[in-house]
Image (tube, rainbow, N blue to C red):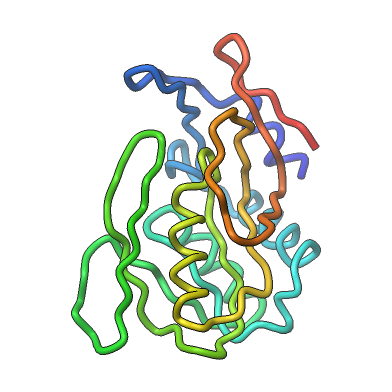
Length: 182
């Protein structure tokens, strides 16, 4: 995870209200999302998860999509995007997402009872997105084989996520800089 570590340590930190936010290709698509970074992330996910035992990768829009795409291309496991707007398809499930900086509904499609899924997201700060998604998937009757984020932000305000969430790296913001932990 050397490329990921290096790029995180160089990431600028901006403040939105009282929330310190790091800007990084993984979480924002700025600066460029380089192929070597995506390859490193995919290899890390394959090493840390049971991807070979899942039917589907499930990711929220928008910043999980490029990770799910790269992982799907590497493993041939299809993925489904949890959307921020409804499509009103039969079986669509709405879940309420609450994070440190937003509240909205997310919509799960293409996942059914008995599906074995890998939940993948770019970052976990408060756990609000993952808590909503995982609870919704469990309510549907899906089996969450693994849940993983590329970056987990160490914070004092964690939401209860009903499954263990793995990460490639953990970070915190100290004195306006991103500090990476293994």
